[in-house]
Image 1: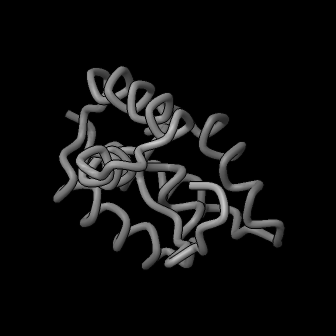
Image 2 (image 1 turned 30 degrees about the horizontal axis):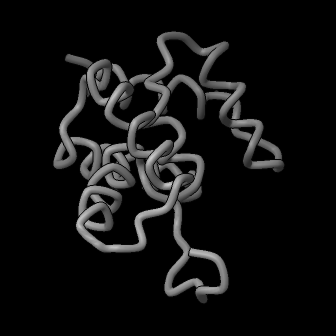
Length: 114
């Protein structure tokens, strides 16, 4: 991996990252860092309660509330259970947040909770 150029950079959910790494694992130059990340992803996958398709739907809904791609993905990865947890993620926006944004975002999260 050392010395290679970045082909694409975009935020992805943990499930998407695991899929990418599974594809990369077949290649000859699957590095140590990638292996460690893959093992972490496999461990996390057991506790994930949302499918990739549902995560994509949820991301669209969260972005519809005005949240950035990065924050929507972090919310999906964490699946906060209350407003306090959600507000910690929303701090990543670094801008004034609407008063009821956390409530609306939490409603979206809860609608996808299994």
